[in-house]
Length: 234
Length: 173
Image 1 (cartoon, rainbow over the protein chains, first blue to last red):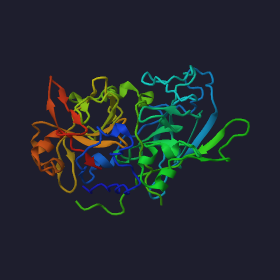
Image 2: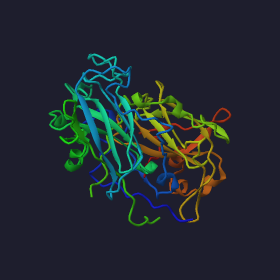
Image 3: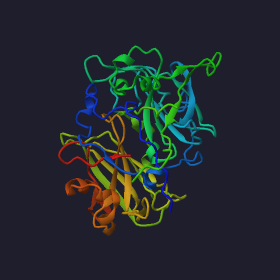
C-alpha cells in the first residue's frame, strides 16, 4: 500500500505557541513537554467530511433564532478557503459563533451585564462552494470585558471552525475587524508571533461585497495546511 | 503562497455550535462493538477543565452512512467527556507497518491557543507491542498516557492531563 502524502509542517511564527504568558488561562493548560513527532498515517491524512444533506447550512445569523431580525449592524462576511498551494478547498463545512451586538454571548457561561437579544443566537454553519468560497450574514459583534487582567476587553471577533480534507487540517480561529483599537492590547490576537500572520486574522472591508442599502461586506480568506511536496522521511 | 492561517483559542462559548448528538458515533445505527470512551481533563494544578471540546476521528470502522468516524463531546462541570463509538480494529501504518487499534483525539479549550493532538490506544491489545507510535515513546510511564484502560463492561477510561507530572503525550501532527 502506498504511504499517504503527509501535510507539511506548520511554519514557525505563523502559529501561536501554547504558552502565552499574557493570556492567563494558558498558564495551567499548556503542555510543558515538547510535542512528540509522528509521521502522518491515514489517521492524520484523512478526516471527517460533512454533507450539507446531513448537516444543513444556516447562513443568516441575523434571523436564524426566531425568524425575527436581530438588533445591530448587519454585515456580510465572505471569503475563500485555499490550501498553502493556493488550491481551493471545496465543499468543506465552516462553523461560526459569536457574541451579539452588545458583546454578550447567548450562553449560560456569559454573565456580562449587557443585554441578550431574544432574536440572536450567534451560531451558524456554511459550506464552501466548488471554488472554496463561503458567505454568510450576521450582526457585527460587540466588544466585551473578560477577566484576564484589569480592564481587559476582547476586540470584536467572530469564531470560526474549519475542517478541510484531513484531521491534520483542522483549524479553529477568530476573525477580527479592521481598525479595532483593542487589537494591539489583546493577548490572544498578539499570541501569534508573526505580524503578517496576525494581520491575516483581520478581515478587510470590501465594497464589492457590500450590498447597497443593506449591509457592509467584510472579506476573510483562510489558508489551511497544504500537502508536503514529497513524503516526509520516516 | 501564504502559510496556514493562525490558530486562536476556541474560547469558553463554543457550545453555541455544539450538537450533543455528535458525542454518539453510533447514532446512525453503526454495527460493531459499541464502546464508551470517557475521561477527565485536568490542568496543571490537577483541577478538572469544565469547558473543553474533545473531538475524535477514527478510520476504522470505515466511514459509511451508518458511521461518521468523527465525534465531539464537551467536558462537563467535572471535566468529564464521554463519547460512544465503535471499537476500532488495526489500521495500516507507513510502509508495511500495522498500527494498533486507536482513536485520534483533538482537545480544544479556553487557554489552549491551538488544539492538542493525542491518541487513545486500548490496554492489552497485542499490537500495542509493535505499534510504531507507541514504541517511539521510550519512557513506559509516558507511553501509558496514550493507553485507555477498561472500566465497566464496554467502557474505556482515558484521562487527559494537559500539564504536570502525569502530562499526556501530545503529538506534533
